[in-house]
Image 1: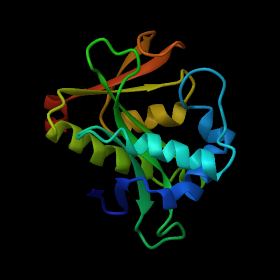
Image 2 (image 1 turned 90 degrees about the horizontal axis):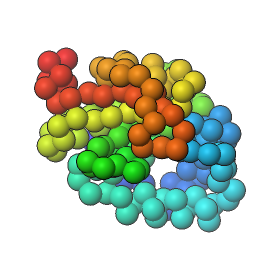
Image 3 (image 1 turned 30 degrees about the vertical axis):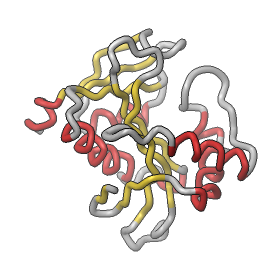
Length: 178
C-alpha cells in the first residue's frame, strides 16, 4: 500500500497474527492504547480476532495497517507494529486520529515517525483537512513522535476519550508548508 525508505505499510493479514500477539501481549505497548485498564492479547485466536477488526476499518483514506521493516537490518522482514488513521471515538464532527504502536524491539529507531509521515500523506492526499493525535498524559515517546512529524501540541483535552489526553493537530495547509 505505502512504502518508505525502510518500511512497507500494508493491510494486516491472518499470517501476521504472531506479530500482533508479540506486540499486544506486552504491557509496555498496551498500557498506552485506549482508555481504562490495559487488556493484553492472550493468544493467537485473540490476535486473529483483532486483525479481522482492523481489516474491517479500511475505508480510504482511513485504515489500520501493519508496519513491516525492509531496511536489511536485524528486523528485516518483521512486522513491527501498526499505524492508523481512524475516526476518533465519540467524535461529533468526524475528526480523524493518527496513531502508531510498535513492538519494543523497534523503539528508538525512527520507524514510528517514518510510518506516521507516510500515513499523514495518505490522509491529506485523500482529502482530510486536519489530522489529530491524542496520547496518554505521560506518554512522552508518542508526544515526541507527534512533534517530529510536524504536529502542534494544543494542550490537554477531555473530548474523545474518558480520560484526559494530550492533543496534537496538523492541518493540510501546514503539512504542505513543511
